[in-house]
Image 1 (cartoon, rainbow, N blue to C red):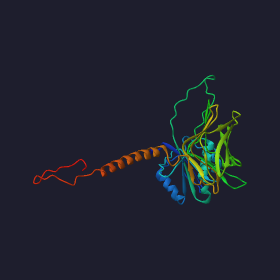
Image 2: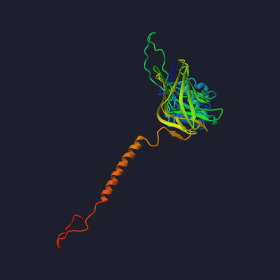
Image 3: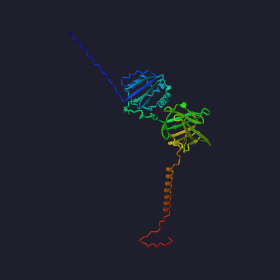
Length: 344
């Protein structure tokens, strides 16, 4: 009897990468999560989708669950073995649900005008150290919230005069008290109200913090005088003022580099970075800036003073040289010796 054996060899390809990729689009995405997804696969996907408008994001650890609301109605796919080297402009996410959802929503506002988009979130894989197991007495009482990143702008329109109030900071605002530090980043536009004051409501760590910026007018100039901070978490309110003269003419904005601080006698402080603010914008954009640095600064005055001293010295030297009188008679060995009187 003759036996025939058939040997079947199965090759199992296991792909690993340094990142994962989460995508969503208006068109259906046919991507296998078990296969590697790199540059070549991504280019092929864009061709299949007829070269869509691509929006790039980078998340530090995970995809925010709140993105489910933003991508509702889109086709989505998650590839754990995807790694795309993005050369175009990429938007960094912080890992905070509220901040990430607002960032993605703002970036995709213009996408509503397009019927063909592709959004990509690159999620680097991280190796975490094993956490120390705490007992009931040693466990930390609270989890530190991630610090938001990026510039912050608060904008609202007054329903009475239809003017806009705008406040910009190059980094999230820092609210500092004796026992805590809280970073205040972006918030939903519906949470910003402009009546006689600019009221900014920010949800942070399960509590709501309200900033009420007070403005005043005098002789055609507006000024930012104080800010009232209300914290629902601690049920406290703080009236903070500043020593800086934050003011500008009508329809001008105020700008100042560095840190602008509002504080009180109890040590509570609100820091704003590279502040630019305006209360009477007509089109929702900053007008010409009235900078906090005057035209003639201390270095300019020092330079002018030294230049003046050098100029005076040069004038005195030239005057002395011009007053020198040369002789009009010269001694000659062939003639009688010269005799010069005192008068000459």
